[in-house]
Image 1 (cartoon, rainbow, N blue to C red):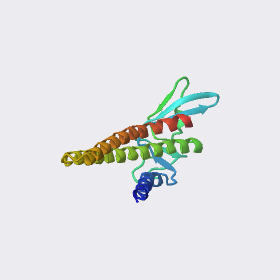
Image 2 (spheres, rainbow, N blue to C red):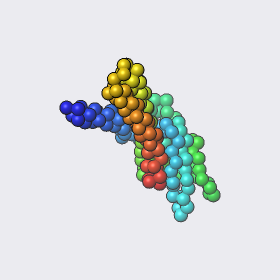
Image 3 (cartoon, rainbow, N blue to C red):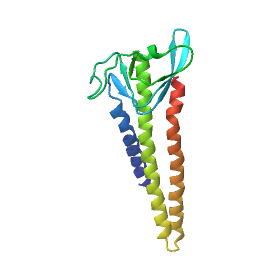
Image 4 (cartoon, one colour):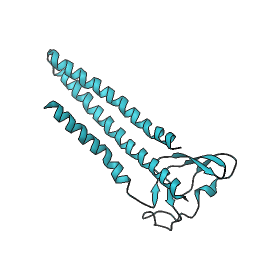
Length: 179
């Protein structure tokens, strides 16, 4: 019975953690970057490391005012036109890109947002498990079984915290693989 409950809980956690991905991955013509995105761009025979600043709009082609969302600016500048050799670029303006570059930048943005949510959820769960473990230890009343259960809760919470920290590294790993 415990295994069935554990499997059910893990499946629910998986579904809950994937729900932001489904929500953020809707097909759109624009994406609003919530975090800075680093990307390798090829222009002619040269390669550039491009950093798209956070809180900027990136569009799939030129857009008029409010075309991306209510209150969004007009986007008439091509991102690759902002690159002037030599050197790397930090995109500090709203711009549009080619379709394949736009899709990659927006995908990396979605991955960052999803793993930000996963991190918050796991840290909240870690806090609850530490409190539950401490409660078991405090209310054990000399009963070794409850003390062991409380220690296990705290141990598993610390393991969960390590997993949460790895979740913060996953977007950087995916970005390195895509580059």
